Image (cartoon, rainbow, N blue to C red; front, side, top):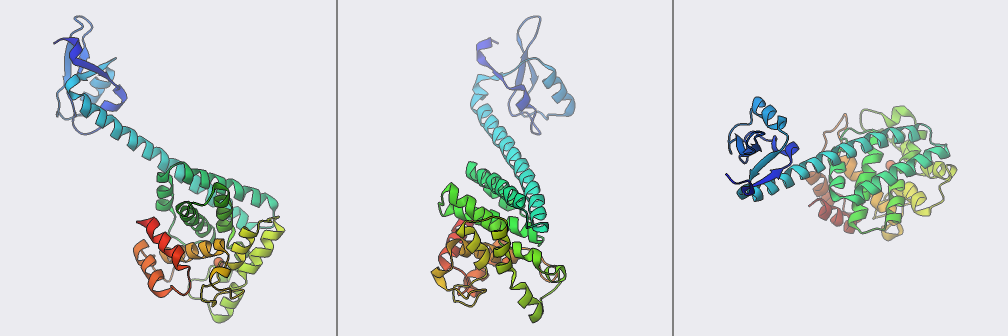
Length: 309
Ligand SMILES: [Fe+2]
């Protein structure tokens, strides 16, 4: 069989899968003739894999070239996907511990510097590749804790921000606002924050102080950007003016507060609590559209729905 009928292939790729996708050959040392190691379609049993990988160089028939290229592309995209998922998980774990630290010790400026680092990582991860955004959204935890909730809200807000074509600088500010939006909860009694059930009126009126407490803590931390400060202060305002603390209406609620507020509700609905199951993305968006249209910015909600399509 003449040598020009063969092409050399990447050894590290061919042993994947249950069966050989193409016949694999190697040049014998004595005669330099091509000898078939495994026939196309034959099962790639462990012993066969060992023999195949032990050879210095491997070849396939040129007529199998197209199939080989397709196979390599698939392998590369799977490898890329695995790498993204691994990086995303690492980022999520790092971010969760930084946020827990910030919420435990909110008065330090160091906390704000760490927040910026986390947000930069998140923004770059999301801007570098769309898949990272999807994988981040896939691994957001569905158990409700203040720090994981804050990270989830950041992931949703940044994803929505990218969808709304915000600039990189605006995304960084939005990410910081989302990450710190519930900072004031660090000053509310733990029994109220971690209560397994619906809050009483008295507990709820204490809880309602967290946006303003958060605003003052953020000022203390050295945050000067009004977009961030107002998002923290006004993320519980409602479009019809029934929210708190300032009963702002419609567009008088700052944009970042409307985005963070929307993502806050979405994460609360899709998270599991001791007294309620987690809703699916579809059910949560439907409920927001039908029952909360007086509370949330409908234009932003419609963009969020498009983002999930
Ligand atoms: Fe809140």
